[in-house]
Image 1 (cartoon, rainbow, N blue to C red):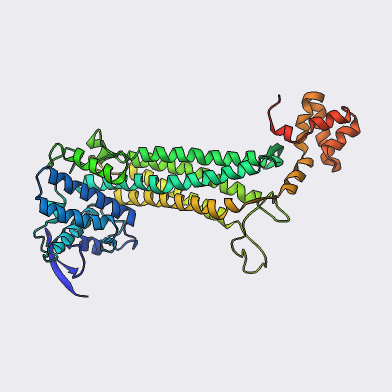
Image 2: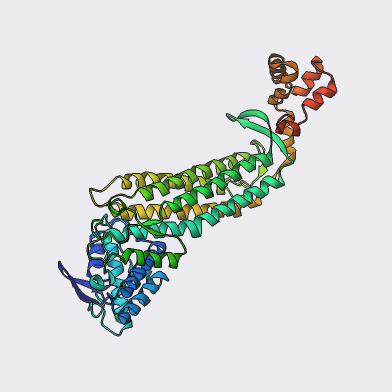
Length: 463
């Protein structure tokens, strides 16, 4: 590979000839061979949006020549369109401020603009990465801003639609199965009857609330640190700069971003990210519960509940022919566990840093975006490949109710709790049904017993 020589404040550095990045990016690549995992396309797109918005604000303020601003904006657009992702090679585990990644963006945009203008890569002429691309900015406000833009956009564009889709699939099952009565269960023990549709309506409501929580997570990210520059004071930027740049960010993303009310809070702390990810953790807990219940309801087919049949997606064993496993539930519960793990790291990151700067920014960005992606992809896949294909085993559901000892609860108001309890215990000891024992003992006329033990009525409040 051929190289060119670039320089920064520490001296000369060999950079691959075709790379749009420069000396500071190369130093970071050399310094941080940690995970092999660079920032993903969502973050890169968002930093391109931030840089383009800053460029246009500087042009409007008369700080950058109109012609130069157009070339810079064109290079920024290529970053936004993810055409230059390969030129963002720096590992997530780097300087805690994300300075290396901010400079990576500055260098890529500078060099690409220079190339578009017919100049020489690495010359920093006529577009300088610091003086022009980074004008009025600091890594300390650009990276927090990019985290919020990337996170809010990912929630808005990916997570909320995916959760809405899952909610709708669960609601469809709830409506279709409203007529099917089955045994309820509490403590994993038999309880009074419930309709399968009611059970699934509970899952649908959990996801409906997850959509609301995702909206709250998005809202927590709408304040942007842009304009605080180095320590929150706004040194080296005009008073109107953040307002003008953020207005363009909002225009480009369609989201109502605003300037932080207090720039010192916006750079010293990352409470908005901690809050947003806290909502994602709740969503993960909801999805885990739903996926786990569906796994239990589909267990069997001969020795489990098997009240619903799960879609057969793949052979489940390398040794047991014909076995099919609840792979979608397993996927979604693992997704949920990973999101909860990410939350621990986010919490540690949120409380870390000293005085005017949080120094866990790249890790927090990665975990936030990873959790959003996992929850969005996991929810949509679970909806399409599991919930959509579920089939109710109506005969099995009905059979569980007739054998259920807890249906004696409907007799208690008429014959008393103690007598109903004796019927239940006798039925269990003898293997009889509650209905048969109640009639055998003559506690009420047979027609009254049948009326009290009407299963669908047990799933409704007393009229």
